[in-house]
Image 1: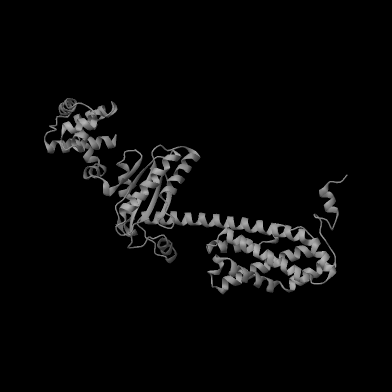
Image 2: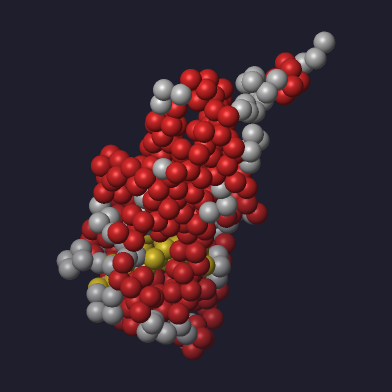
Length: 423
């Protein structure tokens, strides 16, 4: 016994076959004759029913839509007349039209709604072609399945073409953002109009206030997990439609427009985005530059952001240059000469203490933070005041510095920070 598929294929009037006869030819002839009229009717309905189409009062775009409708109607009519199954190759121009919709910001949902309007208009044209012709009426009943299959293939081709166009646009935008950032970091501001417009679209202008944010993973993962973590950090720093955010080597770099007086809000938003990553197991170190007047100062802002990030010494969190102390700034900007000026006994003391847990270094820092008040430092360290006094004496003995003299204390604190940051 033959299978249902084989039975349908052998029956020219069944669900799987291709109806033939004069009725189909008559319907096809009517639709061909009215193709341009039906395409215009479909476009008119789209402009009434779909807001994203209606906002374009552009005869050129309207003509493109009518052309697309006419092409779809013509392809389906040919499929009917040739008594064959539809294929995606019957719709070769769909990709070009899909790219145009993506460029105009028309959503996939609206694009598919327009396609459905075209389907309804085509079927109305078929019914009009039937009229009172009994032969055509019988043929119309037979070709319903074939029309639906043709519409299904055409709709699938349209949806896939749209998604491919969208992916291409996203990839193209990502390449443009990377190229723009590299030029800006190299001190080469854009001069061609398309790139200037691309920056202006995201709020970056030659004289507009901006900051640079640089983030890296505190514990880099390997392989795909590393890329996923960077993607999460990029998303956390991204403010859609505002600024550039690019994954660059082992860091994420964002150029962020800052409204007048909006630095605190910008930093708060960055902190909130970074904090949200904890739930994904991602803990980055992020540095934020001071605000600069325009994209010509992006190289300097980038170095500031990296300096602020380094001040975290590998810890997770957000550090803004404007929130750094003068001491932290001086330590981060030290050079080789400054490191050589650290006396050997101080270097040895710091290195040994850090290796043992950093008790003395932390006591020294807490003592300074408490305005040289040993009793208050003891409270914050949760130890007895005598313990703090003992540790300070030991620090003085080991380093040869008098921690009661401001000048020597500042020198010691700088040395401790330099050694701590370089080791």
